[in-house]
Image (cartoon, rainbow, N blue to C red):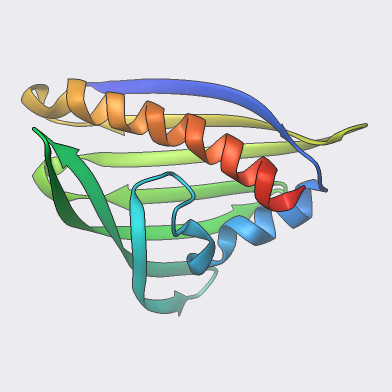
Length: 144
């Protein structure tokens, strides 16, 4: 399966560590990307938090609820956030967000690597990009 890489840079008015701490909390994921409406079955496995996120996606004028398997962790002294998501249909998403200190707070370099079957890749990429842009705006508003 081919992968698609999506990049976005945004600024949040807080420290890199505070931004990563917020992202590591499963409850913070609700409405962060515009699609997730619930998280449940939260557990810790060593340095990784694992949970189920319920995503509400628009499909042909209807809304479809999908359960996502999510794993999150931090690296690089809590300035890197990593999220790995498995969803139905063989769609896999890996989000790596590196935060660096800046005068206005923290600059985030967000990279999504999406792997999906050919028939789903276009739709999944479009939704991932919309979620990525929404996540940057929402995170800045929440942490401001």
